[in-house]
Amino acid sequence: MKETMKIPADEIIHMYETMLYDLSYDLHERYSHLLTGLLHQMDQEGSSSKSALLLTHIIDDMRSKSNESTPLSLAKRGVVPAIKQFSKEIENRFGVTVRLVTERSSFSIDHRILFRLIQQTILLIVENADTDTIDIHMEEESVTFQFLSPHDRIEVDEKGFLRLIQKRTGMELKIEQRSGQWFWIYFKKRGE
Image (cartoon, rainbow, N blue to C red; front, side):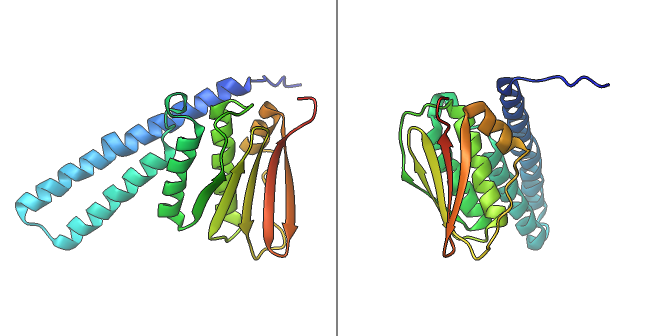
């Protein structure tokens, strides 16, 4: 029989943050700078404006992806500014407006974990709900995502990264739907 090794959530989060930092660095510092150099060389040689326009679009897209995946130095900035920055990237990339309607500055959850929980939930809603706007209400013991969706059912990843974060934070996800209005509510389990 195979013995499985259990890795603490903090180690997984640190590994995830490191991978995102490396990806962000590669996209912004290596690849977009290489393409920018190529763009300047094309300008000097008087090359096609269509190629220059395509390169400019690729560079902008890579920088946007870099900003989206940057760990955002949560220890220095805090969770609310990080969510606001991520929300701008979501709006630029998908055209979905994400608003922090209620925000608390103190939370009973580690800020890095809370940010990833909110980030992954936003992405899950954007990918599956066909919505234009997501409102987030952040309280000390809960986070509520409110949005409109034409779907009667939306799949939620119960075994993936979101599930791991829920276990780590002692939070539970409750989903309610009323006439197309959805409420995804993460709340602290009693006794946790």
